[in-house]
Length: 110
Length: 140
Image (cartoon, rainbow over the protein chains, first blue to last red):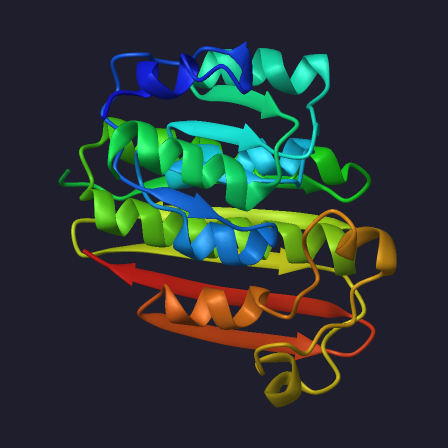
């Protein structure tokens, strides 16, 4: 599945589009950054409610392709700008973590 | 790469939101040097956890990263309070982090265990009241 499939989900608001042609490896759900740091998959979609600058730092270091912020969480403008520079997509949704992860799974078969 | 390369970073202890910048910079440099991606990931994880620890516990410090043909060495030195019980600090789940740090997604007692897990060698030199120096190596 390409990132574009996730960008197109109606439940998601695209805050940063990242690299739409990037091939997505896996879906990963976690709010504890130390666990995300060691387990987030390269080229993965990371679903979390932890919306702060450190979320982006972890995503950058683990080569995550896309951060999906659940439960209406967002990131500040400066962090979104930085995500753009790093080529990492950032989406926000009102859905809970499990629901949006399931939507992504069903949309892309991963 | 025939010669050793050394990179130095100063970690600002006041700004939690900037923690990770040195690790990102090292990751990008290693990528440019063509270092194996597994090794880069290990270095990035271990160094980021170390950087976070320096900000949470020690008001910042200095990191030196040396890259040779055989290994990547990270030396993280701070002038913080020192670690009273290293064995306890190495246990997964043990943490002395403040509540505000926990609310940001850290302080779960995973830092030092992650650093050990993702490096091939790790040595902790700590003196109460003087500071801590952690040396980590990832073999190439």
